[in-house]
Length: 422
Image (cartoon, rainbow, N blue to C red; front, side, top):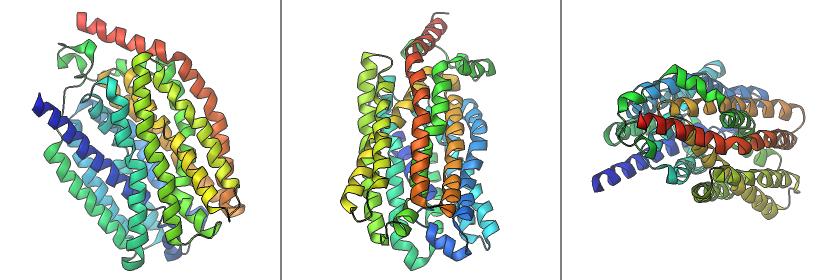
């Protein structure tokens, strides 16, 4: 038992390292945006194609990765994904022209689509009652990875140039590939589901018929729809925040880093707190996790309010951005855990990949739309319009999911009990 516990915590630690450093590599382009634009002499709209390229590539590959993770060893596939991350990032550092840079950055999206495999593996490693907290730990890699990437960009880029920064983060990918291969072990699908105790693994192999039935779950369909909208605000801020602070609020590089740290600190605190609160309410009622997600609505309002604060009100801007990000962080771990709660174990990677596909589509449009609006009006206006519009459209999708989640979870549990008794 002690070996099992140490093994599962080692798996979580390595996968956290994987996702944290991967997010740092993926998001570091935001703080490097101005340097890259100056290097290739391009405008915001052209830079928007760079930011969206990797997201489009990842989105197209999510269904394939989801299928592979449900059929083969998730641990081995994650090691391969880390190696691909390292190699494609090195290609970005070597790109001689803007066209080659767009193509090489787009290729970095290949491994972005591997994330659902990590969540699926953790769902079979930890019990459902703590799934929200475990997912929150991994979700924390997004804000923490952003800070790590921002710090690398701020302190390394002026000294060694943006190309060598990509060499450093690409090398991290190769190191992580080795760690995953050495310490992450595959576990049987459905190993932590109480209803499947004693059921052989042979009955939990991927079947297209089971995967197609996912779309009959109204909660999943609603969560997929809201996922498209929910990621727009965070990706607008993630990829364009540094540029916005520099050009429209007049912040220096150090000041921009400070504001970025404060903002993502709010998100980093909100993720685990939201996950823990979701787990607590889930043990009391099936819809408990989604009830916690409602915090996203006031969070979006506070982010919009921050954009309306005068440029001289530095503290008010930072506090509103931090608080809005804190409340927005309640959603991610609980939505991921809810999808895992509803999905049968043998198609869980596919269910999560479908969510990631929809989210990546929204994420891919966000930086491009921001760049187009910014080139015609301003970044601040682009931020406000996209965040407000996405938040308004998101609410009906959330309410549909909240209404149906209890019955969909019970339906999944009934199917698992039926398998166990047959």
